[in-house]
Amino acid sequence: SQPELLSSKVSIPPSMTREGGRTSGYGPAMRGTHGVRTGADSAIAAEDALKMLKDGNERFAVGAPLAKHATSKMREALVSHGQAPHTAVFGCADSRVPVDTVFDAMPGDLFVLRNAGNTCTHAEGSMVGSLEFC
Image 1 (spheres, rainbow, N blue to C red):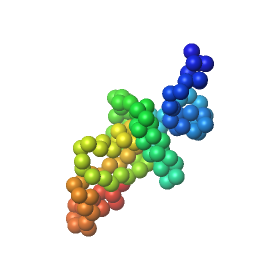
Image 2: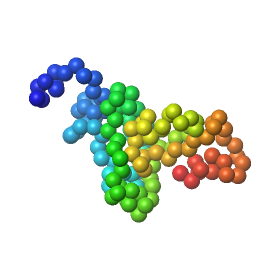
Image 3: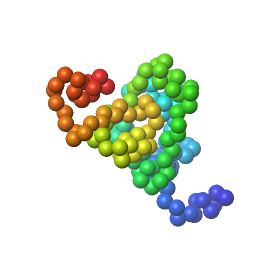
Image 4: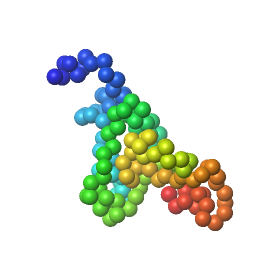
């Protein structure tokens, strides 16, 4: 029942509560016009993108992720409208740290670049060129 839930001692991430900024429902608002971020969506301010990353990481850390598998309509929207990630993440290629999972992100949210040793040179085909693409 609702009174039991409200009095529960279960830790709920602030990003999932009204106090944490939610205005309706539970969890983060649906991202993007098509449920995922595509080229049809407007840019997100850096401060808002950072908040989305922090909120997603908090949900991951407490075991309450909300990201779901992309539906066929979401995948079609990404193909039809292109990508518009709110954040580029440059990280290690270590398979034990799945970036999308750690930030509880959906396809289209993050532009992830991974390599061994986090080297970043100006050589042709380097990670810098990939970041410039984003």
